[in-house]
Amino acid sequence: QAASFPLHFPTPFHCRAMPVFQPVGQKRLTNVAIVRMKKGGKRFEVACFPNKVLNWRNGIEKDLDEVMQDTQVYSNLSKGNLAKRQDLVSAFGTDDEQAVCREILQHGDLQVSDKERQLQLE
Image 1 (cartoon, rainbow, N blue to C red):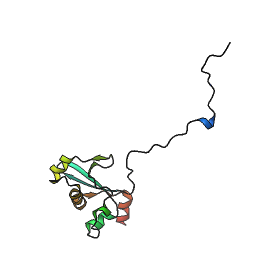
Image 2 (tube, one colour):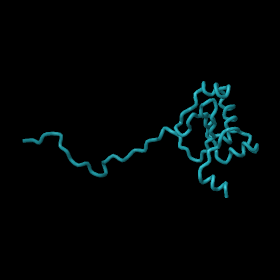
Image 3 (tube, one colour):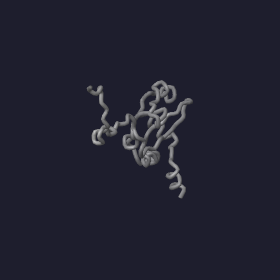
């Protein structure tokens, strides 16, 4: 009498599925300085290059594209949540992200890591 199908044979090692690299649909926050500002009860954040923010505030750097990693304004940068247009208008009086970025850069709080803080104190 014939064996009933399907027959199960162990899968040879070379035929097993290898894990496939899946691209992550989010930006990795490496070498990023977050400049944060609270205005109108809302939080606004922008992503900048760490060493360029102080140059911008001191007037050494003039080009916004050299300072900013991304010209978008976020409500929560680490989660990738963009700020709503109506929130920008109510807090800053405009939805022009370039103008909002300039104000956040000039008047916002620069988030500094513990290591950077220690280096500045020494």
